[in-house]
Length: 137
Image: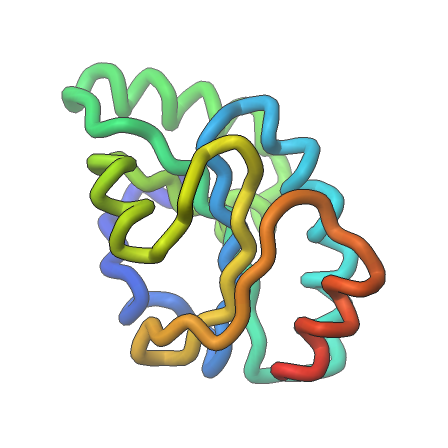
């Protein structure tokens, strides 16, 4: 939402990047369950960064602008804006490339600098998922 083009994973800033991938607007509630833990990971592991990646089917420029401006207005916190990268793409191809079987829940992936998936989970945060993720960091 910073009004610039980003190339993934190259432009992600962490040595390890935790990406929270949402497919539907209602899934923001699932994403929000992960944010406190993601912030804690960043504080305790300086090389870790987290990002929210709402994914939307490829749209024309006017529709993308309308959606982006609406999201910007709904996210007054500059830190949250900085961490939100909206992806406009072929969602089926994207899911296949990352082996994400469906859009019914969010997916949380830990990526290295090259984009290799080191860890994955789906759905709401749980202490068990947090413990499993922390072991990979």
